Image (cartoon, rainbow, N blue to C red; front, side, top):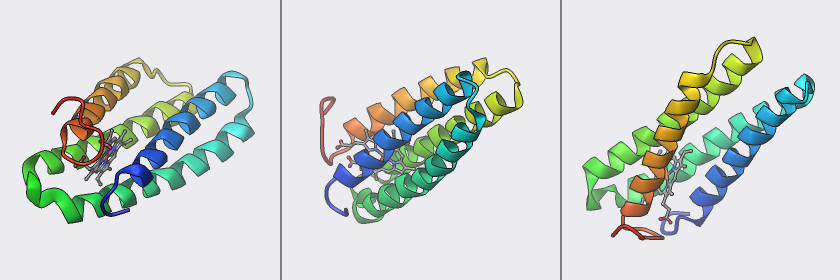
Length: 123
Ligand code: HEM
């Protein structure tokens, strides 16, 4: 949990899947199902932040600025998941937030993969 990124990766992969399941359920008109999946997704936000914070506390000394930015962009992604889902539920337009979600997700993946632990395709 402190030295490998496996737990952290598991939490955000599950979150991404739950996010798309929630959107799919909404599109299928299954609002009750969407509500339940959305609640489980919110639990996974906490697990993403917890596993990310554990890695952060132990390793940020390597490159505090980049680790800090990585954490903030991670929180930004979670914010965009919420904006898309809440606005979808309310029937408001979501185009802008989908774009920001894609941008923040690409950025956090790039930063995570650039940092020293785990996979390092850009190192
Ligand atoms: C949906 C949100 C997030 C995504 C998609 C994400 C993605 C990633 C990825 C791809 C890695 C690299 C894994 C590897 O190389 O094995 C990583 C590592 C990491 N993440 Fe996240 N993350 C998210 C949220 C967060 C948050 C909120 C924090 C801080 C509280 C955080 C802190 C970290 C830290 C400290 C690492 C280790 C960096 C290193 O490789 O040295 N992440 N994350």
